[in-house]
Image (cartoon, rainbow, N blue to C red; front, side, top):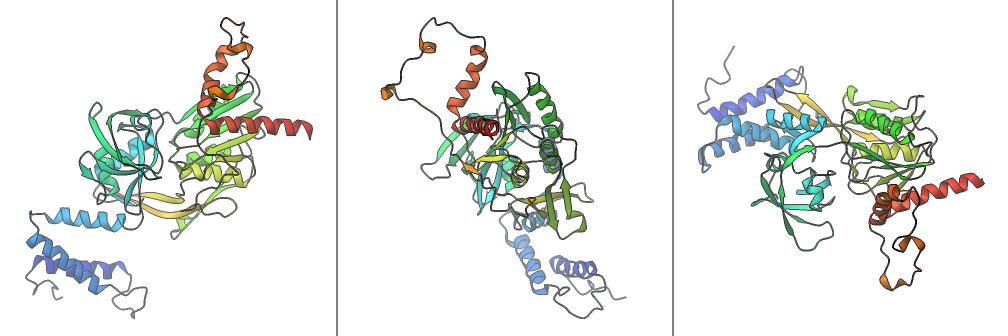
Length: 429
């Protein structure tokens, strides 16, 4: 058999031949099959790739080894597909595992690429990013002194993570425009507790899910048990605002906690194993309690699955603002060299067949973010509770913190008002 490389003197030319042969062998029977649109090989593009490779090797200002160039090419192939596909080296894979488990070093922010810009999907609760006031849809212009306009998503994540106690500067501009601002953050160990709960008012519970990690479904069930220790619930608020998503199965488990039957979500893709469907099980933690789900522009991915399922099943009233609109599923594919791919393999759909990708979940009741304040000139009457030394009731101290939160969080206050109204209507009708 003739060696196809025998007459080729340039190693870069040999690379082009090798790529061509690899693509041919990847298509069964391609060498003997007639040319069709399905198995035609882009010979001109392969030759152009080989030429670019050779030009870089010969003329780039610094010497770059072949392995680095090829890995950069693979990163480019994936990053140009969509904002969520990526090539994962061993460090990136470990970072992804740490995030899923709920502990990593950094500033506590979920980011993505949108129209070539690095944008905030959401800051994570109780982290440096959240405390600094970063908001969903903020655009990150610089990390330290490095502009982000030509930075890959993985490079940005790597730069923001680091040793606890070290400083990092982030320059951002808000989604509505305005003057960019630079904030200095101190990295810390980010231990994300994905579920929190409390009683906002007698009989009305609050359940906050900040991320969907591997144990979030069980944590939600445990939190519901804790809420019931104070007696039966008359209503529940499920807060998914600024929740960037996470593990698909955990989203299904959380939705299943409130549904006793019916479809939760289904996915569609090219591979057989990307065609999936998830339905509720009869065993349900809270099948009947009135439910309001809070969402906003930082609610993404798995959070949108939960909100969309409860909305389509008419199990909950969805309140807030339009969600982020990430309706794609990424699959982690290991490679033989110990690294891997994060590849978008499917889109997911709500029970009614609604695709969330680039559209988001529309709230049933739109309530924008804000806070309640009473003007000093309002002339409101002074109440007994405003007088120094007044006699208090037993519940006053316990409800003080919740009242302050409701005054600060207009959306949360309106959700509680809606739950109370639903109970009044139910009692009458």
